[in-house]
Length: 518
Image 1 (cartoon, rainbow, N blue to C red):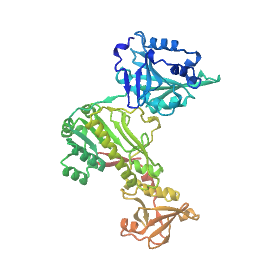
Image 2 (image 1 turned 90 degrees about the vertical axis):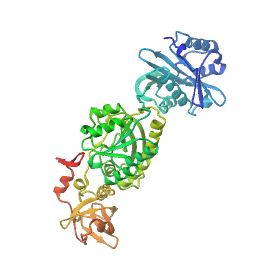
Image 3 (image 1 turned 45 degrees about the vertical axis):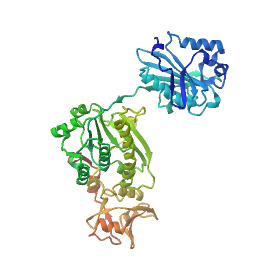
Image 4 (image 1 turned 30 degrees about the vertical axis):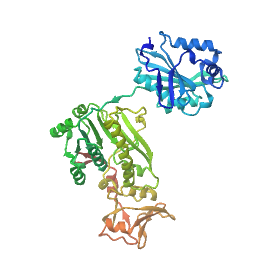
């Protein structure tokens, strides 16, 4: 393979370091000393021979010859143009479009400053975008932690390991770590056209308003169960058309509107699995926003399940919608941790909402305003580790089991608290709703005591549970149960039929809850 005629530019820079094609004039005594230094060459196979200026110049000449399928670049600091190391591409396989990358930071005083990572990022971009290479690989001794971390920070991934592959400088066998980078799938949005939003919730409406401020033509599609009058009123106020459809896949008016607004479609918990016709309208430009820590909490009622599981991990993901449900490519993501003092779904939702809106604004600026290609993330969720939790309905699922321990009961009540109606039980054959509860440890109660109101004062009642007391504010009780008396000695009790019902699967369609799966 003859390379020199396609190699331009000769210099690649990120403003901090510059990669420049080496020639024989770059071979200095310092350069040669790196190759012979036991500290520098500890993980290089070049350590097995003694290098001279003459042998190193011959090596550079060979790499720069027309017959060579390898390219070597020096790594130079922009601030003082000092040569600190080298990075090499090759051998390059023209047919398969893959190549190997090798790195050496020779100047020891510059170790640990991130220059290796910068050089890898530059050579990766150059190889993919200029040379047309589809796949890059690199290998390092498993004990070479500096090199390994540099490649990972540059967006590469571990592709595998070859056990006992090398003999190190003290004669011990060590593994080789294989790292790789592949050309990422890119989607270029049309320069103009309308934007479609599908789903529900205040975040979608806030995002629609942001798009209109940018002068974009937006249409929003709701299923009946998402068509909240307040949300539609907000859209009317900003002159955004709202379309309510029971089945968007078979709604000719909706399909026509989608076709006229097919620059990009972003979904916020859509009620439908989309047909091939809708996927073809957008030709890969249809995505779902997930405000969950993928690959966990696929399904529904994400924040309720997280509170039940005491999981404070958070995530924002934009994922391509394809024929494979929930398995499209992730094109943008941000992970975060929620404050541990959050108790209710509203706490999770509000925190997520604020982060998500900023996240979506960045996505919009990059790919709609600046028209940068949408690119799959180099790191995708590990779907083999996914956790699925189904949709819930408060009216069916939020029945309290008083045999649980006190903290589990408090978690359960909190999981169905604001913005939901609250957890439920019965007192004297009357259904009651509990909100804003908390658990405190107390002395032992026999299981026969569970559910009894054992103390009451001007502010709250206390209910005996396994391990302590559930405290419920009186104001909350009165607000949610205005015609119910809560007296000392009364027992909160949930019939087994309701507990069984709470575990039955809830099934939805575009209209709402339709049936239970037993």
